Image (cartoon, rainbow over all chains, first blue to last red; front, side, top):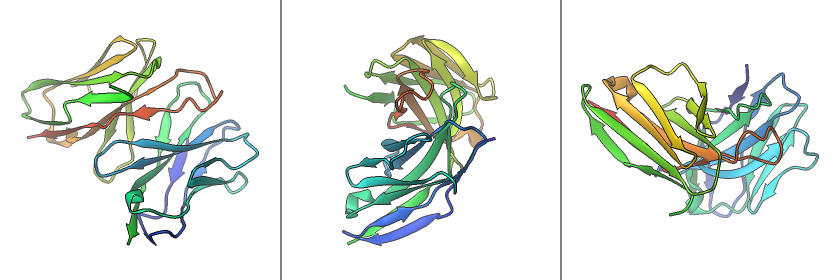
Length: 115
Length: 117
C-alpha cells in the first residue's frame, strides 16, 4: 500500500528566508506522481507543484521547487523567499499508476512565516 | 465563476436531517471527487466519478449518497449522519483518467464545513 509521511507537524520561518518541508513516500510502483498542495485557513486545497517519477529534473514553479530524490523516496518542497501569505498547511500527496487517479495524502505540515 | 465551487460553505445539521452538498466545476474536466478531511487525519477519498459513472467507492457508509448528473456537477446527499461525520468535505475535479500522462492534477473547491449535532 502507498504511504506518505510528513514528519514535521509544524515549521517556523522568518519572512524572506527559504524553508524546506519534508515528504517521504513508500510505494512498490515504478510509475507514480507526487504533488504538493497548500491549504490556508479558509480550507481550499491549492495545487502547488507536481513531480513525475520518471522526470529527470526537479520540478519548479515560481518560488516553489521540489527536491526529488528517488532512491531515498523523498520529495521535499522548498519555498524560497517566504512571504507572510505562505503561512498555511502543506500536504504532500502521491498518485498511483493504477489509473484510478486516487491521491494518497500525508498528514500535513503547518508552516508559520514570522515577520 | 471559475475553478471549482462548493455550496454551502458551512452547514449545521441534526442527526435526523437530510441535506445535500453541491459541487460545480468550470474547468471542462471529466472526473470529480469527494474527500473528507477530519481534524488531525489525512484527507480521505470518498467517491470518484469519471464521465458521470462512479468508479470508486472507498467503503463509505450508506448515509452518504453521491450523485453525478453530468460532468460539471457533483452532489453528496446526507441523511441520518452521526456527530463523527463532522468534517470539512472537499470536492475536486481533474481532466480524467489519463494515466500518468501530464500532470492530470486534481483541483479542489473551498470545501463545506459540516457540523452534525
